[in-house]
Length: 428
Image 1 (spheres, helix red, strand yellow):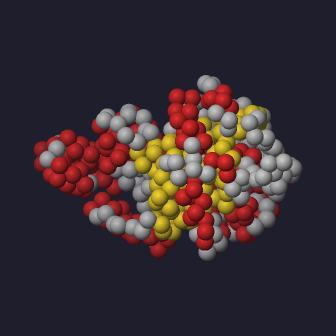
Image 2 (cartoon, rainbow, N blue to C red):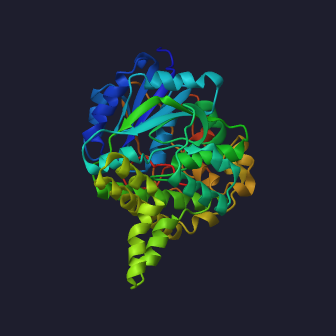
Image 3 (cartoon, rainbow, N blue to C red):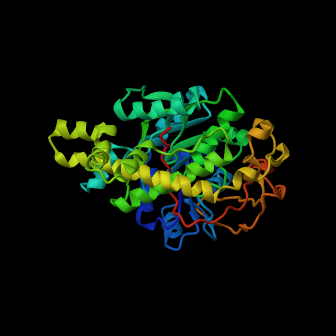
């Protein structure tokens, strides 16, 4: 019987055939590839995603229908064999020593380790903008100091005007889904990803839940563990992602009463100024983005490139799209916060189960029918779990997978019309 791998690496994909081969080649080319278990969770794809993954030698787990990113991540955890489970996206490409660097950061036993995500190359203006304004940054520990609105607004404004040099390896508040990993024992303790999050925010919710459950949780950023994210060179796709991130943030705020909804102030100020018919107000509306997002103006002056002035207006559109997603999400998920203060038994064992009224969402993670998945390397597995489980039913006790407790078998998720992807960390 083959020995257990040191780390399982999962790619969760839906219709990722155009890009997943590049991601897989980067994983099989790792400096410690023999020590890795490489997996692909095909979340209801209608293209050749599963066939491409199988031809590359990955272990494939298939969902018969699209169940969402959190459900795909949970299937990967349940099917994996290693003590550490890592994730990258199907449109990412890992540096050759990425896995080695990630594993090395576990030397002092943190609960999770993430790496840096760099936007990929390309001459398109949108790609160049994303390289200058990387949307995939971890949330920093300074968020733990206060959840007050004034403090968060000050952090936001400070972020616009200053850049802080930070240590290459440091503790962070939460990790980025396109380059993150967790100890299996930590996931056993805190539970899996909340499958109500079909796209955006599922990793932030897990990290937040971990910190609410135990004060000494440690999440570490290893900046030398790098992946390149190949974004679509499309303004429409960029704004679509921003809107989806807003939806994820709304779901997070509904799940946690202490998490305030994020409505960005600059689009509100610009809209208020633009509604006036006075020419002075219209001029102010046109100038506000350049004033309040000064990095574009500074870059234009340094490089003597007038096109960089557009950065402020792209950021305005991104923040407006995110705020729209937040507002729509607060309405769409308006009943999630009243799905009951479920009892701790619905979650199972561990400190996450004793948070009581602080954890109204945790019952949703464990509720519904559970399905065990027992993988074998090189084989394709099919998960046909129904997506009709109600959060009002107690969790089904199913058999453990690869030594996993039965209470961590996640429920069948819900479908959503948003493609899989990685959410950036919301600006506080």
